[in-house]
Image (cartoon, rainbow, N blue to C red; front, top):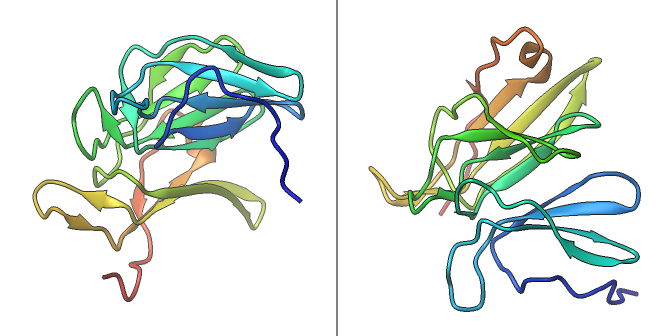
Length: 167
């Protein structure tokens, strides 16, 4: 049965969440009750919630991948008012320092993302979502990032399988 863990410091929607460790998660951005895009983050744990570091930009409708024990990758979304951004950002989960990540092939928002271990290799995968320009519609594409390429500083998002039956 679901039960309430704690109240967040900020009411938000269209945010993302990623696990920091076994007891804490980081909630990133979103929109507040007045529909304003947020720069704020907060840490939620079994002992409560606390405001964390602000981002250098507003962000909503994005997705966040935990790519290793210390780093998350924030992907796409509406960034600083730009719909369907192709920008990605690395975030250190302990210092909250932000640095630019590899750009997506297709800017998108409201998409899904996950990490996957396949054949002993780790990948980041994003799929679906929507794009406002040029087509203003739902996306039926997937992109894959070989996470081992991050260490060699030559990581790029590559096209994956096209989805079927998108309406």
